[in-house]
Length: 253
Image (tube, helix red, strand yellow):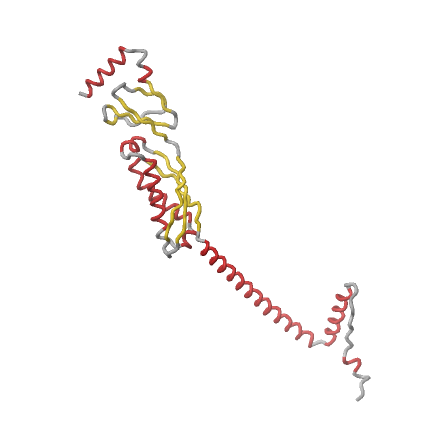
């Protein structure tokens, strides 16, 4: 029956030349493919294009499929992490059609289905991670999402090229708590560093005192060096310490 209808359609095209050429000749762009159905059945040979192809009027029905990469912003999803923290996360999805025939014959709307699946996968994957893992391991999380989506969309003829976790928004109370924790950690490290510096300085002063105690003249040289440093400044009062061994001779016995 189908061969008879196809033959009649071809005869009609030949009888109505050249007007029928406007209805039989179709063109698709380099980035497009045409999936043809003849009397409701998928035409053998796969999708047509790019370039010129022919259809039979009243018999063939075709659908154009864009093969370019499509970018989709996954809306912010409210997610409860593994450690019971509520966050809002959004992502970017890059996908394209790898098999035009499958995306038309196997799924109603491949674009909408892929986008809904991306939002669901984002919640499922991040729900098994802690907040620290989400903030530090975005690349591994995006890779896991890409593999999961690519496996699920393969029967639809869709190839997921890339997934990027773009933004992680935390509650304001949690942001203030994390900022306070980070500030306290910095202050603790500063105090430890200052204490270590005081310890090293005290050891150096003790060593210097031991060296000076072995030579009384070294103490006098240190006095003179201090006076030289003081005299370098203007309007300064110089106090010259007199060594005890000098004035001891004038003291009464």
